[in-house]
Image 1 (tube, rainbow, N blue to C red):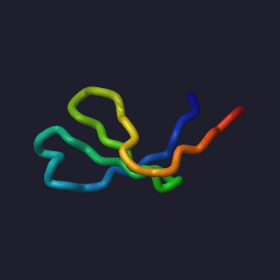
Image 2: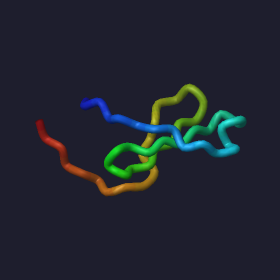
Image 3: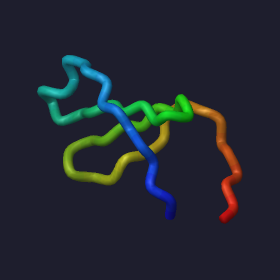
Image 4: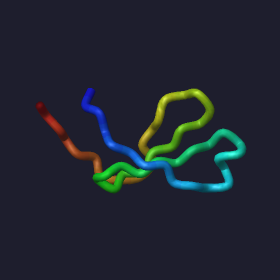
Length: 49
């Protein structure tokens, strides 16, 4: 699995344990508590290495 550079988006939900991240490709991910990040929005790109 390739590493994706992400930047955290500040929201008040952070105090409840919900964090939003934006990747360089423009996709938005959510992280709830200690669970792994899941993609919410963005184009699904077929990346083959």
